[in-house]
Image 1 (tube, rainbow, N blue to C red):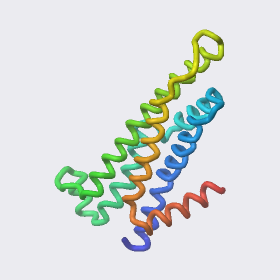
Image 2: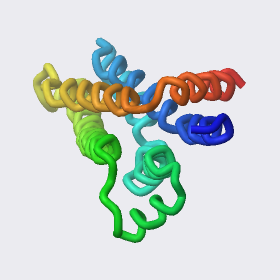
Image 3: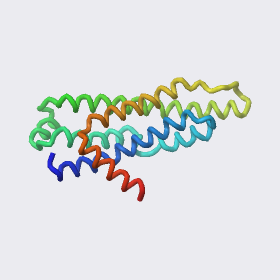
Image 4: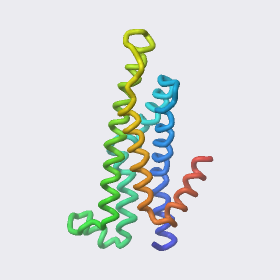
Amino acid sequence: GSPKGREAYAKLLVPILSIQRDLDIVDALVHNENKLGALTKADAILSKEEFKKIPFKKIFNAFADNIYYSDPDRANVYLGGGAVPKNEQSIAYLLRNDILTNVEALQAEVTYLIKEQKKIESGEEQGPLETEDLYEYAKISSSSMKKYLELVPPAEIELGRTYFSAIDEA
């Protein structure tokens, strides 16, 4: 796209890059030995507004609907239900849904395991925690996010990361 368009797309990528960073942090936290502390931190991250279903979809759609339809007439026809999405866009939506499904499973699993860990620590139940599902949801969330970002043209992703770094350091 044009330099102006590239800039706009890159700015729409910033919240997605923030979600990616958070998912990478959560993936590291769930493997931490200090289960209760780490799960509590993971829970706080996963409770952020952008991890709720509707805001999550809006963040991804704002980017995908713009990047894959740089021709406004085609975008309007598509959004009105009259055009077929490009292959990359179909893949992007599938990946977005895969990320969301696993994030929701991860949220539920973290909440459940915090309760279980508290029962173990109080002596109500025997340990250790069963963490296979937790690890799987965290891994898939992170890997699907990486695949999603691989669909983004290199110039946009580079510019998006530059904007993200500037905001992240501020």
